[in-house]
Image (cartoon, rainbow, N blue to C red; front, side, top):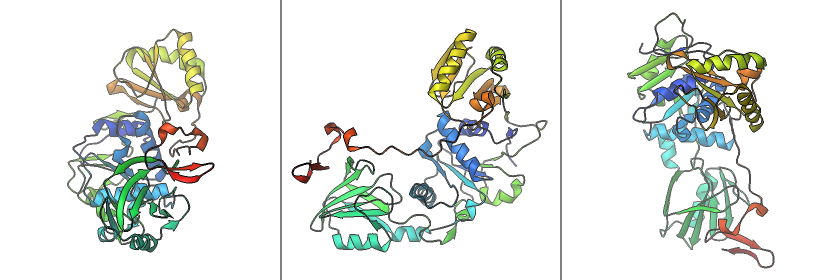
Length: 387
């Protein structure tokens, strides 16, 4: 069956630490979890621990028609089709593997290549956007939208991070720009765009499960019956079972929950001094107010502490306080590492910060230095012009 890891009461941030500890950018990783909340927690925890590049993680959350969700899933499916999986982590639930997705043939039919100084029939371009049900709007802010202003067409493909602005001279592409959906300003000029116009569920041709067979170097399965997923991982070199395993069995790594204090700050203070003798102590707190309060506690106890940016290993008798939300703390005795969150200290967990939306810039926030040549501006006397 391969390697094993014991995750006592396994819905902990310790799982994200384990994933980070075995990550190798020369290998591909498949993680199958039981429910969507665990996927949310895992992605958020990996991001908070700041060990792995979050743009190398692809995941499926519940059936959801939000444009951001369509983008994330579309990118995941395209990475699988294009075999760009080395150094990537793909996270699915049992349920999401049963979803139907568009075939590679369907994606290729929707492929569009736009090059500067080359000919594209402008009217046919618009017909194609309408064919794939893009919504015409005054201002492009979401995927699946387009706008037309004279010779300029803005559109936002599902597989792109930002929308694209194409300026025509007749049927010749004069410029191609990536721009911000928030303030509409140019991010960068590009000479060529190669993209797909559909999202992963535009057609429902095949099972997602068929895309993962025999492809991954490392598989981590949260299931009591790992044999049922043998076909999915095929000949993976490493096969980890992440469901609960009795702690008396042999394992490669034991990850436990730390002690909970349920708001008993006096007990927390007492234990903290003892922990520093043996462990690298990391405290993750979600707000500046909590960091300020616990910094005061460190001073009261006469303990050295730092405000770090990520998890610290190696016992240095210094408490590492990090701003960030984790689903829970964890304890790795073999590595002398402990992570404590406000959940263990105060007995409550703050709401998840999984989805973070960038604030839309108001006009009065903008500076003239943000403008790039070719951006549209509005003059109070003369109307719309090009900078």
